Image (tube, rainbow, N blue to C red; front, side, top):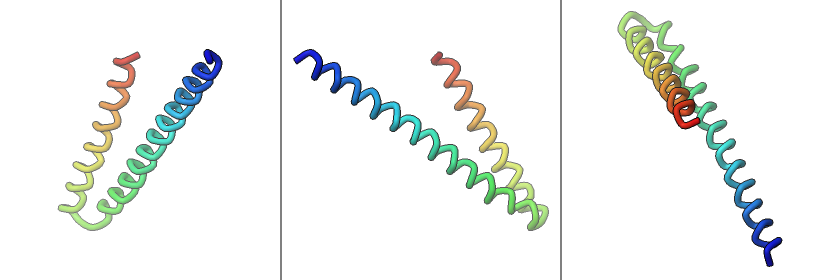
Amino acid sequence: MDWKLALAMGGWLLAFAQFSFTYKLTRKKNEDELLEKTLGYFERGTQARSIAISLVEGIWLKSQKTWTSFFLYL
């Protein structure tokens, strides 16, 4: 009975690792797509350029905050 429990816990650990990896990868992909769309604002004019700068700063600060909190928990 003990080996079944160990096998089940290993399966849950593997599932959690896979979920975490997929979640982080999907989140990074979405942020990259948002950044790519934001870069299109730089071609439209002065007001759109100001909006694009704000959006890029927001994306950049959000990614920096994520890395900071990641290293805090290590």
